[in-house]
Image 1 (cartoon, rainbow, N blue to C red):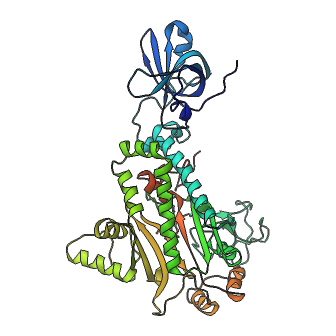
Image 2 (tube, rainbow, N blue to C red):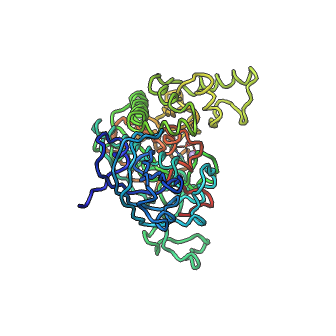
Image 3 (spheres, rainbow, N blue to C red):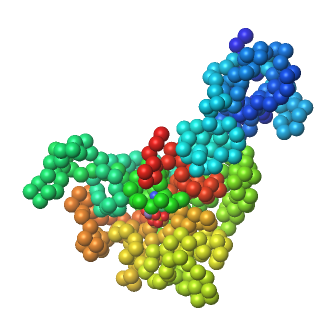
Length: 467
Ligand code: ATP
Ligand code: MN
């Protein structure tokens, strides 16, 4: 009789013994002696392996020789209570079918303890390691948390385009999209490239943010969020930047900056709590292996109230620290863009909890942020987190057509392709707010991993586009 496959996540929790089960998965390790082999099998459904006990009397030497680390097996046997330490149940194998061998001389994941740098070079296989299995299961769970949070709040998932013709934001750090023959570019008399014969008939790029289109959604549907890939050709080789990352961008009609801060805080806490509730095994593993303070840090974020502080006061705190002898790599003065060392000082050393910094100088923030009456600052809000620095960037948006236009002129922003954005301020303009959360920054925090390349399956960074 055919026995249906049981996932290992379910098999290790079974409490009815002496039943026949079938499990399938990849061999993590095999040990034993000439009478019996113990095979640790994992199918990716959980961090836990199931132990297969294979009596030498039942299996040919030839078959057992091919049961090596990395090989893929289907095992039928009896689930029994385990006598050994380390697992509650094990499977006494009746039959073992080898789906795919893995030559021990070639399979790269032999011994444990490969460095993360090395594992990035074999990113096609690293999901089979304990650490990356845990990270990618948590990644899935965080995506589910995000959709659930917004859906329950009545937000609509609004899909914004990935190919865009607006170059007003992040010019210079955009990846161009073209079907033109790069060896034979059509140019005008000034030597500028002519795009009229290109696929879209104009210069197009991969999006750096879905926000502007998100505002179109919010000013029609009320509350929306985007959750999609975002591209930035910033040549910054840091542990916190990717060229291709995922961003969540909620945009809310009739929200002011306070409402914006409230929902940002509630949202992050919801995601972190979701991880604690739904990813306990994986978090425990990461806590043991990567960062002994991880789970405590996650719990502390849920339990505390985030500090809300104007930028100007943040600068004062940093200047005080310098006066008392604290050394920063980058200078601090009113008007400076904060480096992550400054953000982390405020969060980790001064307040010892997350900080929402507000009312930044307008010069270091985007043109669409709502201008304060002081003429110097805008209603921006960045959420700063321990170990990460900026995790969220957001603001109340400028809803006045005249003020927005004045700022656009001041900054010389090319708006010729942006008439549709300005229409939101012309027709039924309304107060509204939104923010962007970098999905991988959230994952850095939740997993305790140190490098953003290690929380996305196939990272894209300068000079790296393998797999
Ligand atoms: P940073 O100063 O850290 O480069 P930013 O000010 O450029 O961030 P925003 O443009 O406000 O960031 O983007 C919103 C969010 O997207 C950030 O708060 C961050 O979480 C995330 N983010 C921005 N750039 C990257 C990147 N290159 N890789 C991964 N996440 C990013
Ligand atoms: Mn940036």
